Length: 89
Image (cartoon, rainbow, N blue to C red; front, side, top):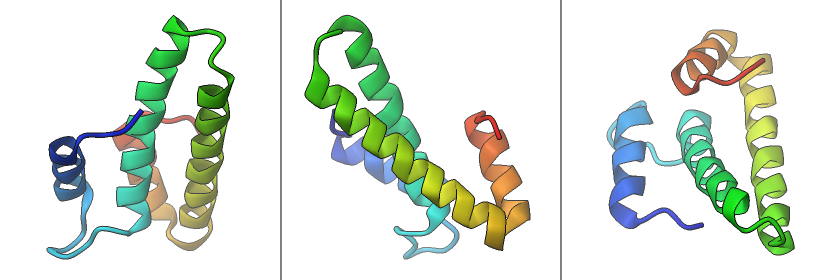
């Protein structure tokens, strides 16, 4: 599932660190979390959509890599992201 442009802009503006920040790990994790939620809802309805499932697993893996990066390099920001998105450690 694809995020609409307005939804993506609001997510970016909510999680960015400065005015031109569009690629920080916090922003990327926020976007991936939203896309994962949309794909999860889609797959609950369409259980045999294997290409959608593959896309979901790729997004989960990418988010996990970004969370690992934050955990190793910026632990306090890692905790903030976990709390903000209600993710498990």
